[in-house]
Amino acid sequence: MGFSKFVLNRWYGGKSWGVLYPIVKASEILYSAGIALHRRRFSPERGNQIKLPVKVISVGNITVGGTGKTSFVIYLAKKLHQLGFSPAVLVRGYFSKVKKYARLDSNSNNLNPFLFGDEPVMMAKLLDEIPVWVGRDRTMTGKLAIESGSNVLILDDGFQYMRLERDVNIVCFNAQVGIGNGSLILKGPLREPLIALKRADAVACVGDGEKINDISAIAQKFGLPEPIRAHYNVKGLKNIRTGDFVPLDERAFAKVTAFCAIAVPYAFFKTLEDAGFQISLRKVFRDHHQYSKAEIEKIALEAESQNAHALITTQKDGVKIDRNWLNGIKLDLWELEVSSKIEREEEFLRWLTERLR
Figure 1: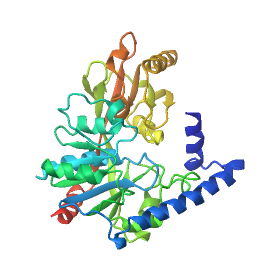
Figure 2 (figure 1 turned 45 degrees about the vertical axis):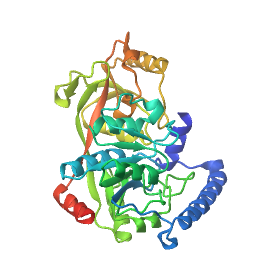
Figure 3 (figure 1 turned 180 degrees about the vertical axis):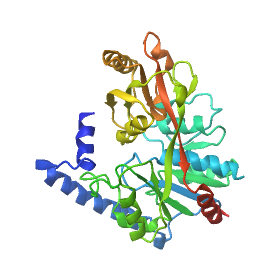
Figure 4 (figure 1 turned 90 degrees about the vertical axis):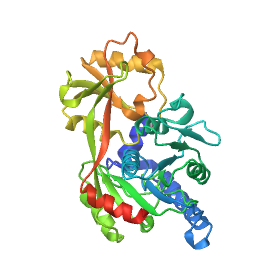
């Protein structure tokens, strides 16, 4: 946790690397060489990308995590289903133990986040019967999805997955932190140089923040349309112990201890503050952290010492917390339910469906 905070402060907080600068600069040079080789290996010019017989949409990012792409993927899948398509989501499943592939949906008997990964399980629960296919080889899971009746595929975190040809490339940016210090990993948060945006068809600016104009300027520089504006729509709170849902304006508490294990925790905390919560204590774990019963009990005790009225976390974190762990804990633990809301939605959906049809 300390290391994560140290790195985030240098990526997004304007802090200097100091004596570590030569090391992170060398890592940036090596990383740049590696991704250049990867791009050449699977470039369209070489003709070695695989084309599937249905339309493929990639939703990805050019920075390390925390761009809101997962909520954007969920939004897209639901909207395409409403428009008469039969979508499927293809996800790698970071930290999953799936060796080949797995098909998940809301009817799956065992949605185990420690087996399939936190994001695939969260998606499966939120997407009703829209299938989520987990597997590193998304060419294979794509073929399996087509055999199962899907006629449009959504690649989650697909911008760097060069093996599979896609029809629409959308790159998400976090409106609060943008591209950070603009450097490549490890020196900065960029997974590729910005020139890679030439492969994109559009960028999405997710959330509210001070980097919106910067992202718009980047899109313009690479000949892309004005960014899609996606906002977090806070729907309410779900009690992890009881499963009860409470609309945000009907909650009976304001002072909370908030914790999360996501790539850019600032966005979560800002969403809570914008929703009117007073955060008495913030706890940050590394992205995809797997909690234990003892950790949740410790957080609850710390929350009590801060006179918090409740505990609150993200939906991605909520799927990893067994409600039986909460027996004996005085405070209720809630997950914040959010969804993506798109500005000028009709215009966006018209642009998208024209490309798909």
